[in-house]
Structure formats: structure tokens, C-alpha cells
Image 1: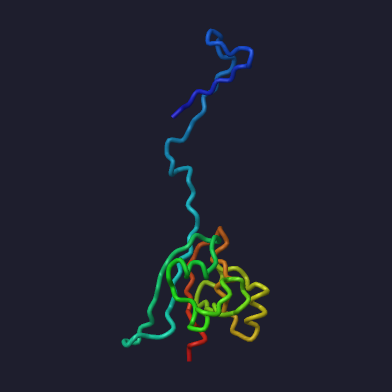
Image 2: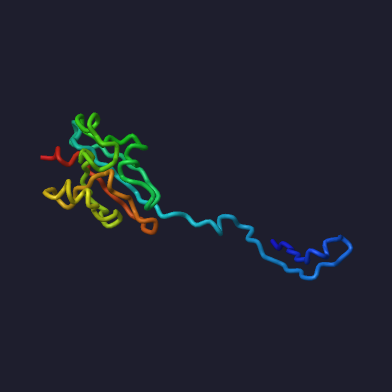
Amino acid sequence: MAARITFRPPEFTKKHHKPLISLTKRIPTCISCTTTTKPEIELEFIGPKPDENGNYPMDKTKAVSGEKLLRNIMSENKIELYAAYGKVMNCGGSGSCGTCIVEIIQGNDVLNERTNTELRYLKKKPESWRLACQTIVGNKKNSGKVVVQRFPQWKK
């Protein structure tokens, strides 16, 4: 599709004057051709305890890379994050309580590095343990898959 753009000095604005400059500009007709899709991260959340058949419950969702904290993704998708004590005593995501611990089973490479808050709260915990309120899923450029174990402290 071509659109005609006309430039005319302000002193020649009457209709009887011809345009001094006339250009033709191509405008894309395919809207999807100009839209870029944002990279996505696939997330799987493994429940803490197996059911009567020995299978662990799993919740799945997706998130745009680099836009949300793991805690917010879990909250929006109604995926249980806090144990009984944490439900009552959590800090609301400020990183001051340490009750939102998760274990990253797969995909640590598509998450942000541990924050100073995590280094303080998790210094004696395995490297795979993270605070959901401090963990950014993706970096706006990468895509991939993250598998999260909820309540890793319950595993025996």
C-alpha cells in the first residue's frame, strides 16, 4: 500500500497552489509482519508431596521473559507458594522473611542471579534454592523452561 505525503511551505496553503514536494511512502499492509513476539518462559511447578499413586502434582504456565517475579507468577496462577506459617507471616514479597523458598530443578540459566537478599537468607542452603520474591523469570531476551519444586524443605 502506498500513501502520498505532500510537503508545502506555510505561505502556499491555498488549494490552487500545487505541492512543491511530493513523496510516496510504502506502508506495510501486514500488521503481524511488523509485530515482534516477546520470548516466553515455560514454567512447571512440582507439588511437595506425591498423591496416592506416587505421582507428584504439577501446575504449568507460561510467562513473558523478564517481566515478572516467580512469586507474582505463582500468585496470579493460584499456585501454592507458602506453607501454613508463611501464609500468615510472609512479608508480601519484600524479601525480609524467607518464607517463599523454592528449588529450581531445571532452568536456573534463564533466571536472574541470586540477589544479596537471597545470599543472606540462603547462605547455608543448596545453590538450587531461591526466594520466589527475588527471582526474575527470564531477561527479556531469552526463552526456555523452568521446573520449580515447591516447598523443597519438605522433601526427605
